[in-house]
Image 1 (cartoon, helix red, strand yellow):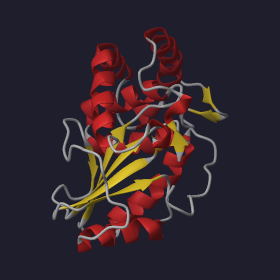
Image 2 (cartoon, one colour):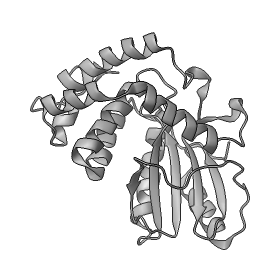
Image 3 (cartoon, one colour):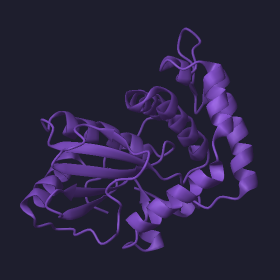
Length: 237
């Protein structure tokens, strides 16, 4: 689990703009990020790999109100992590919610057996780690994998520049795919690393232009740019 001390979610505008221009050039025109190319073997950029024309992608990026987006993220994060001290906050951070109203939290990229145990607890209505925040169960622009009417929903706050978030993705995918429609996963942005704001803006444009499925494919491409990830944590931090 990575702590938010590395980068405040209220970033100075100058830093955001400068970083945005650099990362935009990488995502749109191709280039290198941590030793990996952002284009495929046919020279397509990430957005082109999910079927979006460069001109449409550029126009969407230019039209994003970054201040409004950042304010929306800040509001969501502050409510969701209301029960945590600043030094306890980090990515990935997940809230597991059952339709019976029971909630628990998962701090960090825990192994699948521990996440499954937490899911079983919320279904039973008795949890080891009760959730103390005020997370919104639904927000405009939520990205959902799985059955929208699932009995259990995992709301994850994640960062495209966080290696622990990358490590946690396969775990959540497996849980959703093996749940027979009983578990859904909601992805929400929490950019606490340099360049993560630029990546999330690009991902939001993909969702806007091409839909939910393209967002998830694009997310995989973004996480693939990161270096090899650490193993999942062995305990709930």
